[in-house]
Length: 454
Ligand SMILES: *Cc1c(COP(=O)(O)O)cnc(C)c1O
Image 1 (cartoon, rainbow, N blue to C red):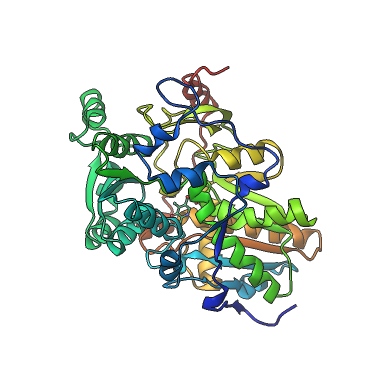
Image 2: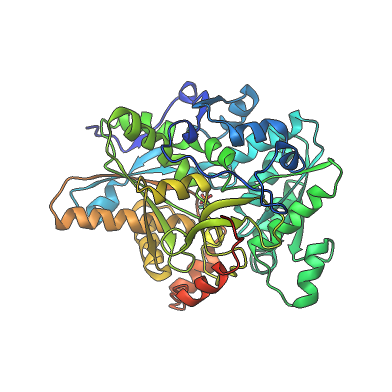
């Protein structure tokens, strides 16, 4: 075991390939369906939205995919990211457990999202695309793609969930600084946005609605604009595998191996990024690491959702996939982890959870912020509210190890910093944060509208 606290890799240790879990998963996800016909989707349908190279990655079952040299060069701006042993937190908890975290907040936009954003922008540029469209909730994904599109000289339109647009001006300003155009969704510029506004002029928007608008704009552009998604899809999860590949090498430097690997889940990309390379070691090399996904009790797609075919967006324009879902009509409560409010979950992760190869737990907001504060006061990093869910679970593991007087090695992904989320911290510090559990009736109602697929 190493005496070090920070484990820093060299530039030459930056992975040369992404890892695709579909090569090893014993539970391949169900086919993706066309939202109009509910028949298996064709590459032609997808090619309206994505460049062919990303579509090939989406359906690929190759174990490794070469990372283009241009993308690796950009990764070098912030990768490899540090792995840090949380010694001061361990001490405060009085636990025999060892706690390590991989710090993805070290990227320029402050989260893991640039790992896929630069790859997506690269493949769009290479295919001759001039502009991209996307949605963003809290603004993490929009910021990452705005940076990436700026690097590759692509225009970007961002449909930002209206409540966040109003409440989080700083993320919007960051996107605009990179040259992106940002619109509060629902807008009156798309057919779908207009239909939502007709029904409810005061609609606060949702991620599902914003996705529908961004998809519509790309689909109607005659190939001039393509769409980018920041989570859920296989190719996105594959790009994030650099996190886990680096962490494997860093745990080796620390001369330890994790008993449990933890990540928060919205659509599943940062969790998959750190956990899938460890899953490969479980499946192929006899390791027995427990993989734990953490979600908010307010949006419990894995722990309370149904495993069923559902639309990826509210307007039923995005492909239908089999996943753990709260229903495409799900309107999430305004919790403080905006990045964890999507109604569904990555199909590969849903299948692995269903098969018992991945565990999940849900945690409440207040206890999550308690953990974030304890982490900030011991380790010095003010985490994103999303990442704080992983911190909560890591602390709970460490306390459980203490109760059982067990040495346990815990690794979690600190997916981002919370420097744009200070309003949430303010609410918490003022004692005004409220817990919210998604009522079972609401899930039942939303899942009644799932597409009928035999
Ligand atoms: C977007 C985001 C998440 C949630 O998305 P996943 O695809 O589940 O990773 C988590 N943490 C941060 C910091 C984010 O920006």
